[in-house]
Length: 96
Image (cartoon, rainbow, N blue to C red; front, side, top):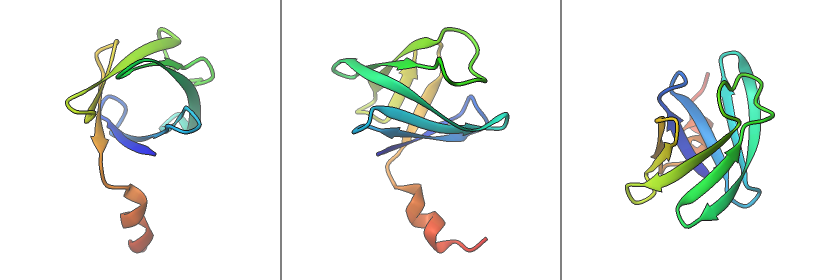
């Protein structure tokens, strides 16, 4: 699993499941969504946002891994930053 911070969408958490080739997310108007992707070459993925209801624009987007895989740079200009620490570790010890 890869954990990402999306600054263009309220600082939301994104999770990439590399084994199942799925990206999971949550947004204010869509509390849960998942989309599929395929690796099209080294360091590059093609993501299908067809079933994300609140996605606007192109349904197929290419993203490139940059900065030693610490940035996911989307063709629309958005850049996700990787969180190397699994957020579930902290969430499991913090009481709500």
